[in-house]
Image (tube, rainbow, N blue to C red; front, side, top):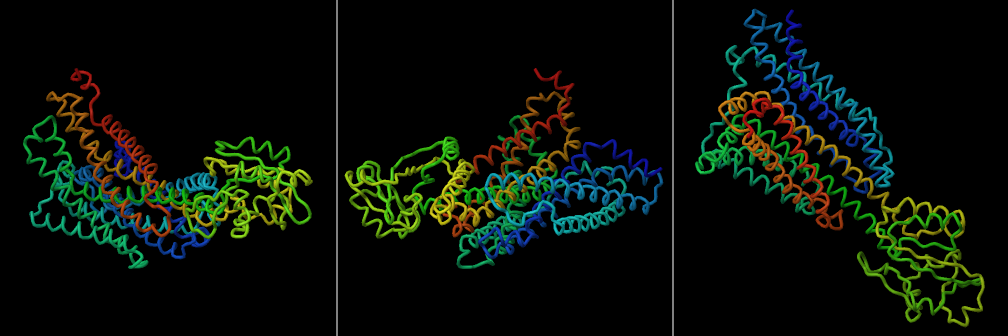
Length: 604
């Protein structure tokens, strides 16, 4: 009988359980996705030129475990808050405490186990699609990557099952020790924090000091060494919590005491809503700020590596592609090149030992080479008949790309009369494109066709940009893959965490908004209040997360050519997605708490 009553309670609060279950599924899915990389040491070593990548992922796993732990603790408290009134009623009807404890234990473990298994399956599907999409987009080899990784399955199952078993014991013990009347009215009890001003000031100072230490450790990683990473991990996590636990609470108090601000519209109600469960908000906002920083930071770093790959490949040659006497199949592929910014045709002729280029053609359209002794970002050198001999002597390896199907021969300039007498004419075409990555597949096909057409030429042709790009890509695309993969995973966790926090309290808030509607508050004013309340919950962790990212990029200043050079795209895209997610959350929350029938009556 008691089991039937418990199941009936589950059906009555299906929407709340759906929010809880979906949040737990996403949490376990993201944990699996991360562990599928973190526990795959073969993948990490083969796809990263950085020897301590597994070490970094180890600390990343610790950070994710802390974030997941906070998330599970909050989900557990939400589960208990949903059921404590029902269980109090069962106890009033004579149910024994031991039987109630068994129901709590079974319900907590069952929900946790089902969510974990479903999350692992979702994580596998997500790993498959995200991984394959990134491999195709980045042209990353991703050697050793696997969507199904048994160690990740075991880690995820073990970690979550242990957490849920501990949560079940905690729930049972807490519920049996709590007085019955308190259980009945716990949801209506505000979670106020009573602290002295000195404690607030101490937390603010301590939070700022911890953040300063964390930021400095990332800035001075060259001096501190690898230990800068765990130092930053600990200090920034603690500093973020202390900052939210003090500043956020103090800010609400200051706004409440500002009568001019509080008296406007429904500001008093909005501030009271925020302070009602302030302790839960400070914890979850700290988690959201860290997830925001991890997601945005990972995507920004991944994008930085994708920018570096073509830039580094461009240091070796001035042209994106050179083609020698193409056949019909090659010409068909050439016609598919997109956004060609420069194209030039040359005629070259040869004898037994020498390849000749026309002096007139060279002076009219100089060849371009890279100075391979000038370091990075050196400008192109234009080669004419006047400096040809000097350049071929100084940079002989830069001219191999211009001699067509004549490897091993010397290149010279011939005047018009001499060039006209020579035979064995061939064509050489140089190309520059706006976006090498966009034309990657087409250029690859052209290179393969030329290799079949001229085996002698292409068997030793390592100076084509495609070959250099493939080499650099094999070194850095793995890092870009990891950055984008983890960024997408953390973005999903971010969305789940904040939405779960806001929507999980919607049913409790529904009665408060209904009361305001009944006393005449217009739905327009209520919607504005909701936008402001949820906006504060989005804005504060977003702002702190951006600051974390800006300092965190210091960790990559030795690996990225310009860690701050391409921020507009990832920051802009992330802010747009964050804003859309905010609007979606506002819409869902409003649809739950605002009574539509009363809204039609009072909205005029």
